Image 1: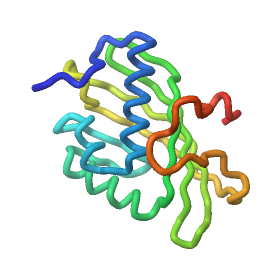
Image 2: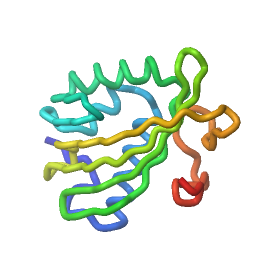
Image 3: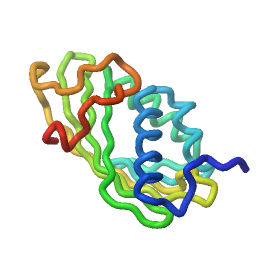
Length: 155
């Protein structure tokens, strides 16, 4: 198997790098690309849904991004250990009726020695927001360098 750097054990710098790589992947909204950051047998708990393996990850993300339109995400380091990273995040999206939401959450990640995420636990809360309350206005895709993070935005 090929390593997916950075690999455990993590330092503060490599944990932050791993988080930005995950954020960039999710902001691509490409389920197949995103799934490659996870082990073949990766196990997820996302809200109340349980997902196992890359095929189910692709199916899950495809459904997610069909209903969460104009999805933009920011992730931030909360804590890290040798092979684990805790992340807080917030994303904005709208539904097909044009209603906007900011979704806040925490993720706990565990990585295998190759740097692939083997376990992901996500707890997420959705808050309706007015379109005028949006804070993420970059073009769809990767958050630009220099764009404020969660702490700078007061989120």
